[in-house]
Length: 299
Image (tube, rainbow, N blue to C red; front, side):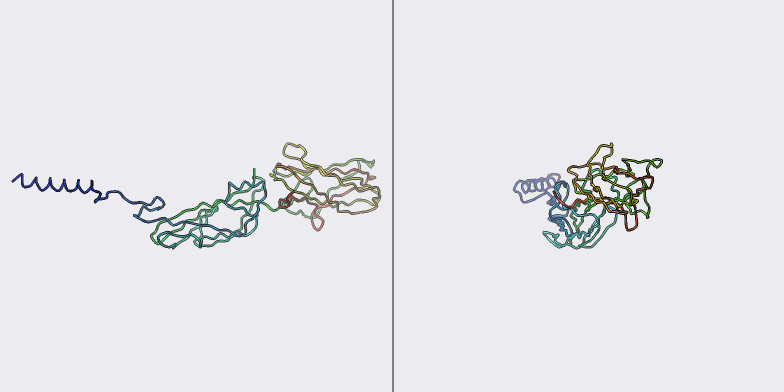
């Protein structure tokens, strides 16, 4: 009786072994390495991003190995995932995860990317990381990390009393007086940023609105840009000539910065004389003295 029970069991075991050896029974699980859920024979969807509103030829200082695209701050950038595809099905859902913890479920999104804390930047571009998730009809997911580099078109700073300001000040002025009514040959004013700002190679231009008595004479006006340690970055002088019978003048400067710099402030030097009356540098309103750094113009 015992032999009749054991014999069928032995034969079943022999048949299983034979099937395995002949390849008739496959015990491996086919999981596509691209599938996010481990379903058999299910290929993961492939996210694809295209962008408009980006710079086709970014400046040389941008390391394009760090980013997928580059855009100017304040510009609308449109990200399009509609070309995403699924090798064995179709896409049924999109989700964009943004840096500010917002989520969009549209295939196409449009956003403005800003540079808000300019003084905290230690280099450019400022990189925004966006994650795209796509879902297919088998509920598998594909992910793509998209890195958008953002750079400024320009910085504009306004002269205001003893500082440089990011916003246009109210109407005011700084007066340069002769000491005790005697003739003063050179007068200086300093304008300082609250925090240093990182500059890429650029061109800059500045306009100072100066008001003086008719009989006061200004021979030249010099702007000296300096860095966080007080070292000179660049200097520009405008000579106003011998004839100075004017009361008000806009004095313009231009120059370039050839390398990366940490900009802190400006020293204004005026040479000439005034017999006790003020020479004013005007701020705000329609005569806002300013300096602008242009990162678009190449040289």
